[in-house]
Length: 357
Image (cartoon, rainbow, N blue to C red; front, side, top):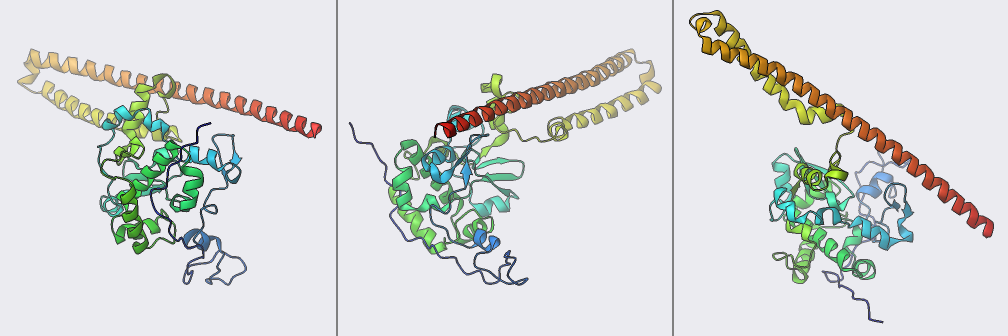
């Protein structure tokens, strides 16, 4: 049997602090501590300042929909989902419509341009932007642990390339001390990372991975930021049968938000229609336009066109509302029935295994 190919981590082994950093001056969430005091194991302190090792930084559970599992029981399966970029890779040939093949902007540039940083745990949403927001996946401790890479990430080429691309994205984002400060304020980096540590890490990483050609990273990271709205459009056109309504990321939790974002421009058009109709009404009442048959014919035609346009738009909006409502209702019913069947099946399998035991 041929030996399994493994991929070395793109950095050398280095010390990672595992002791909590100083919590002096931070508020404590420990009920037993005095108000305003500090506690080394407070929830807030642990989330903000305590350095974790690779395994401590792993989440508790993972899985899609109801297929949940404890991460520590199946780390390989978790990483395949955590580093999954298949949804973007399948439309890679169209990504030029959503962004340019260039590095992402540093964090301070995003702040300067008024972007709000939104955290996510979904890799295929990392570096996607919409409106004045940019979505970023925080860099966990296990991505910087040499032994963890060797044991879990380096065993598959796809995982290795996705993880390398993820690290490249943070090399783009953090290029100066102010970027590092912004990253820590937004909880995007492990608390132990200092500027000196980061500079040494980036230098080491660039000796292993060519950040210019990017031939050892996932092809998604040939591009920096991508526009979420355009990716939604690509998905609705490319996968019309399955993703026409929801697109790539369905961002509407209320119907009013959907119509505000997609049909507010119609109000502007109707305002201009009203101004033109008012001007025509005045013109038709005064000479010489009141006796100008060509002007009256144009006025008549525009009035009819305005009435038909309003009726058509109202009909279109109503039709779209009905389609989306029926689709969401049907999808909710099907999903509920499917989950109920799966739960009953798992209960039967569990009871059967208990009887056999």
